Length: 373
Ligand SMILES: CC(=O)SCCNC(=O)CCNC(=O)[C@H](O)C(C)(C)COP(=O)(O)OP(=O)(O)OC[C@H]1O[C@@H](n2cnc3c(N)ncnc32)[C@H](O)[C@@H]1OP(=O)(O)O
Ligand SMILES: O=C([O-])CC(=O)C(=O)O
Image (cartoon, rainbow, N blue to C red; front, side):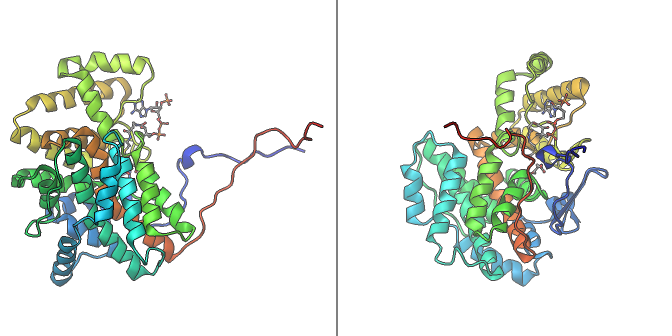
């Protein structure tokens, strides 16, 4: 008798595990659709608030719906005192992703209806987390510089207010636009590792806050969202464009993964990179930092020549956030604030047609044996 070995798909690579109507990642056409709309067009024409509504509800908001939603978002930005106290109690050395994770946990603990998984409740929770995360991310960056909380301003939209609460001054429209573009591009990307984590948690009929908390943990890793920070560390290490090729040769020789390059789904380039690169170019021009783009191009070219591996979204996003004045450790928390939309949309989609996510494993340990006498 032959033992037929089941095929194992390490990392679930290439395995479709469910349907989704939220976004379509198409590596063949190098495109990304949110609810059918090309992400590049949404980035060019829509506010981040409109894109969030689209991802949650499946359609762009009417004027009236958008007005109501933006008014609610502006009224929900203040962080609860116990969330603020908890952040203050964390050591300054705490990784900002751990600060986000902790804050989301407490926001959940404050919600008396946290366990109610009715769609209306989950939409309410999604909007609440959406409105709260900028204050958490901004305040954590400030406290690391010994600065206090900046109160939100309800005359500013989501992106303007995020920058206001981080830097305590109004940002130029060109900066706001580059930032908003990054949020739209980061908002959703089908069954990536953090979204899948959120769906696994939701599939047990746990709650939205638990799903988001778990997703933050998954996003933190450098093979996923943590790569945008790692890109900046790479740039710091290389220093200038003329050193990029030699740095890369040395890194590849020791089999290092080059952060910000490669992707599980896209093998011929990430659909979002050209739009984000344009945003980076606008920041390079605004802050007069051509050296940043020279280094960006030098490393991309060297990686293309040596490995034919293309940049992913984290590659242009990292230096863009750096030029805006964000600390490197704040980059992945910004990704959290953007991706919370995708995560929550997926939690609701999972719950709407739920099946517990529980794959099989193939045991390859020792055979059954007896305990020593
Ligand atoms: C927003 C996001 O989350 S996008 C992803 C952000 N993550 C990163 O930028 C981290 C760096 N990139 C990587 O580690 C990988 O490209 C991943 C994890 C994103 C995708 O990996 P996978 O689909 O599992 O591909 P895998 O790691 O098997 O790579 C295939 C081959 O390309 C190589 N490769 C892929 N990416 C890289 C990279 N960034 N640097 C060096 N080599 C790479 C691998 O070493 C492997 O080579 P081998 O066949 O000789 O062993
Ligand atoms: O899709 C992925 O695997 C990773 C990614 O690009 C994202 O989450 O935006």
